[in-house]
Length: 351
Image (cartoon, rainbow, N blue to C red; front, side):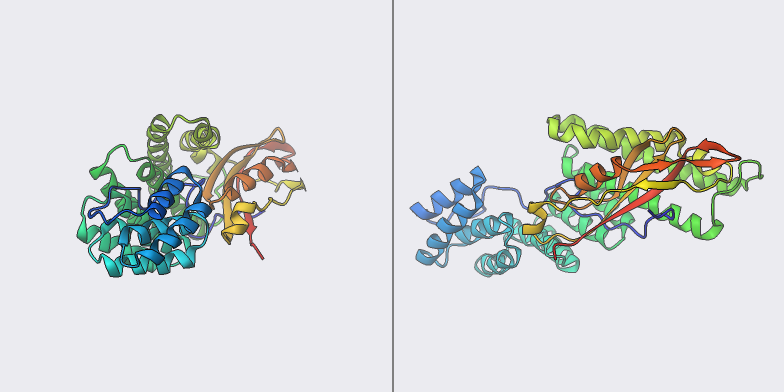
């Protein structure tokens, strides 16, 4: 467990957030073939392996068909074959150079491949062709977020919402960006002031105002998340996201009070479980660190777990599940148990 706040946050596909090229109607329709039609149908049904097989046959018969190559790229990407998908999207764009959905798909594929600069470049190409391509704003925003440019990511989310105010992925990106800015401000403040001040010490009014502004970011993040949950009422979205909303609201309201509490004796961790690695993440070669913010409460229970840095393919959920199992002796002040805020890190590696 680390008590210092996380390094600049690198958010990536928050809780299986899927952005990128939607299955838009293609600008130019190429001749249909049975293999192509079957491949596209399989892709839309979620049978990505079957779609890959059918579309590979289609492009063998019609090598100059950009639509078939495009759907083959989508199928490969969603089947976890990221590098193969990039090559296929390059072929798609060589056949149709001004195809905005193709650049958007390439942008998201670059993001999955860890190529943030390539993701931004492809997203910008998509936007140059189609300024209304709100999805590309989100992909570029996620890439910038991974590079710790949270303010730029927030601006990208706002641009996407100007185009489509009810776009769920943009709302999630906005939430992530605001939480990142909060975390970065907390790091900066921690480095400038050291440990939190004792409650009986006078506080600099300017510092107090900065702290209030910092926690106001979490209020904005919670508002964005509320809108997202209204748009996505599925039970799968309401579960962990609902918990995140509760945590955001708690920290927005009470977080500053935790920072100005008394000096304390550190808590003692009695049990901490390693987070599990999912098969989906292993198949996609996802690696990185999930960073959580939580309260080690005075009653010996971990509460208000909030994600500062997530990972996709179920890894964030695994980290949260592991964090819930932490057992500890609470921090204390003059022998009396108190609640404190901590950060928790869970590293994942497919090797």
